[in-house]
Amino acid sequence: MLTRPTEAAGERPFNNLLRRLNGTDFALIEPHLVATEAGPNDLLYNPGDDVEIVHFPCGPSLVSYMVPNEDGRDVETILIGREGAVGGIVSQGYLPAYTRIMVKFAGPFVRLPVAKLDAAKLTSRTLSNVFARYADCMLAQIFQSTACNAIHSIEQRTAKWIISAMERTDGDEVVPLTHEQLATLLGVGRSYTSRVIQTFKAEEILETRRGSILVRNPEALRVRSCLCNEAVKTHFEEVLRGVYPDPDKGN
Image: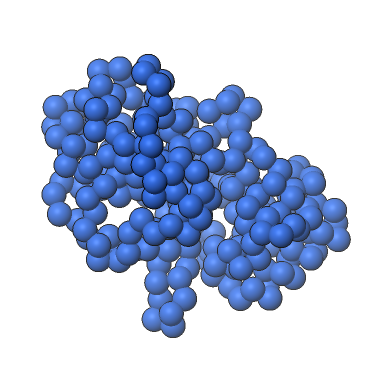
């Protein structure tokens, strides 16, 4: 990761969780925020690493939680974009990482030492409450992902992941996902993903480009998707209104 100056004075990073904080709470952590740039597949944590830094994805940046398995494959569980943060959200003191956390979509990030966040939470109950609420939302994503993997078809899940990526890239129709990355998200072989993509291409829902997918018909894609994304968004709205990315509202 490359560090760079933070945004101009008075401008908060383009991370909805940080923008959710009131002015007093943001001032507690602002001096300790460091802006960075991350590339695709940059590693943030390996299982067992000391979690000392909180990473806030900004703008279109996207992070993936990957669970390693005994056969050597990593299965992706949830995606985190500008609605949240990864690493040390609710911990106090030493905490080893359980999963591998990697950058999926390149872009800007903001880093904050866990110790500084913990100190700020001890000072402010409202700041602590925001991060506790976010932890609840992230847990809901994990629950929903577990249920989705158990009951929904590969086609439904493929559509869901593409839509989820679109929402975190401001609704951009070009999603930087390869067949291989989609297969990892789904926890299936590449051939299964390619078969679904070919079906969507035949129905003129999307096209494939080198290293990316072009969505031609977002509404048709939503029809093919399960409702897991909507369930997660509904929970976010109930617990942390306005934090989940909504391209139509510019957040």
